[in-house]
Amino acid sequence: MKNTIDLNLYRFLYLLSQQKTQAKVCHTLDISKATFTRQLAECRQRFDNELFNAEKGFYTPTLLCQQLCETISEPLEQLEQIPQLAQSYNANQHANEYLFSIINPLSAMLTIPLVTALTTEEQKPKIAFIDWSIESIETPKRGAVAIGIGGFPNELNERMVERKVSSVPIFAYVNDQHPLSQQQEIELNDMENLDTVRVSMGSLDLSAYYERMRKLTGVNLEQKLTVSSMSAALDCVKVSPYVFVGMYIDDQELPPGIRRLPLKLEGKPMMFDVGIQYHRAFYQHPIIAQVEAFIKRALS
Image 1 (cartoon, rainbow, N blue to C red):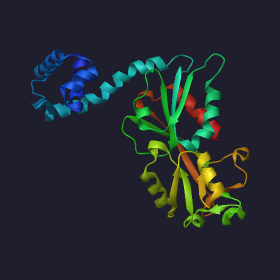
Image 2 (image 1 turned 90 degrees about the horizontal axis):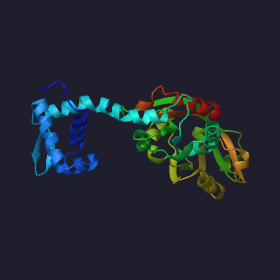
Image 3 (image 1 turned 180 degrees about the vertical axis):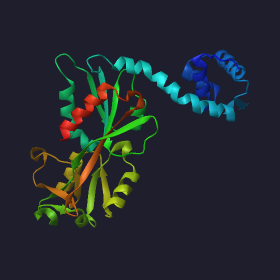
Image 4 (image 1 turned 135 degrees about the vertical axis):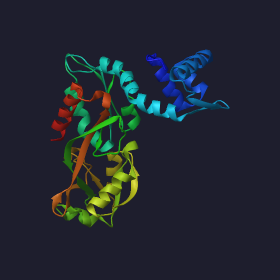
């Protein structure tokens, strides 16, 4: 086995182990069938192993190939992230483009503070806020800093880093005709048999999160209605006996006839833990620390 190898062959080897067909690999790498055949032959020669069992155009990696790909996948991914890091980093700790993948309930609280903090006379970056999705954070656009903002903790893969940045109180919103509207606060137990409307959290909207909350509190809420935005949730509360559980909404943003009541669990305020998620390539990047500080300040 030779001691040196073209790094492009590592990428070819790993990609073929994942995609398993010549057509897909040729399309992804933009190479010809002849180049595919040549690179496969060189890989086999370098490692003195067939590496793949080919049958009817389908390439199944051998055990050695699987072990090799497990070893090279992480450093290969780190190498491919270097151009992105180089483009997003500069001495002023600013980026030219930010992509915030954020759950809807936090969007209203953080959009203006983040835009204001990141936009100056000298720096006017492109900023986008989208529904939370693991794909937008895991494979960020080249040159952009991609940060997820959502609940904490989450089940993420080894390529992602997650940090808790804050905890915010949770409130119950009811219309002024609701039986609970005369109370100064609401115990979570009082809501167990009531219908609630909730806001979808995008692809973070996993049943595991709500199951964890049920086990933590011992209370099972009837979430019969799911809507796409907080404004839609408040509209439902206004015309029906639904209860909306969410974060703080300013009085001027509340429709007439809706009350905001602190939500308690055994007399203590209920809190929602907020975390940020980003690709491991951005670990200890100064921009991440800067954005984290902005989020903490906005939610304090």
